[in-house]
Length: 451
Image (cartoon, rainbow, N blue to C red; front, top):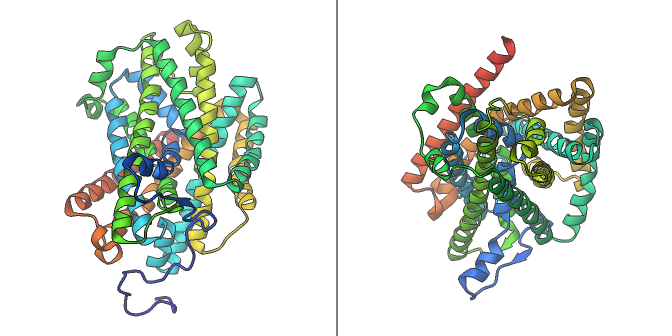
């Protein structure tokens, strides 16, 4: 046991105290009006959920949604819905941890586990964030190529410049960052709402698609894509991010104040994630209504989808809207990924780097392999790299989910806000399901590479 740990666990259940606030430059910076109505308070707490929702609609999710719709019509809509419901519960646990304990998930891990375990979790999380950043780099580069004809390798390099955008937003307050992210999320939503109108999908087929089908389990190819959707939906860095940014609100540090903060933050998160459900479902619906209906069953690459959309739908701007949504999605993800990287490094190691330096390090880790693969293999290589990044994320996910469920189920740590029995059972069940599905997906992926 570490020398700085006491032999007796303190009354609050933590082995160490957290000396610094999470994201100290913005912690408690947004006032929550007291004595006002529901909607004014709801507005004050709205924002963090949308930053989190970005991770559920990033470029890494597009390939599985496109493949699911083009190959199996609307059948896998039920998988998107189930995975989104899992995400809603896990994100509610993350915000609850942050509000009740004043710790983000990284700080909680540092304050609970031994130094070697905490360091190992940090390394795994950094690898996952780099993998996520890699997906965002590739997605943004593909979008720039589709919209402006910029070569992929130059598009990959250009994505490093978004550090300037992030620094500008951070210097002008957290509310502005939230507003920019919400605007880009809305842009993605509007683009896909238009795509749905253009594609004229079968409404009855959509409704049936939200009902789970036994065929998903009995058809091996369908099961593989379904597990890919489930496995790539919950992003590990989102759990760290959410547990921190809910603390930007200046709520009362009393049981009543925390209870109110949990209520409004949960509403914010649930509404935002339902919007993410709409966008993921929309990608699959457009793929089904456009590609499956026309007999193009093998469309899984983003570039292929872009080239086919306008000709198949007979709408000139359909492909452009698709690329605009992809660019907004990629840029949005880079902003939230940077925040997550800062939270993880500061939380696990209790050290701070200048934001531009932290961003540059993360970006270089993602850009170097992206540039090499793009230069050697072109668009097909970036597609494989995108899938590989999702495999890495799957590997790390359980190392974030299990500590989160464990902490929020601990009465010493959470007090009266501890998970009730029904939530414990549900949360542990989801954690085990996600771990099992990711192990299966990884096994199938590696077996595919070796054969």
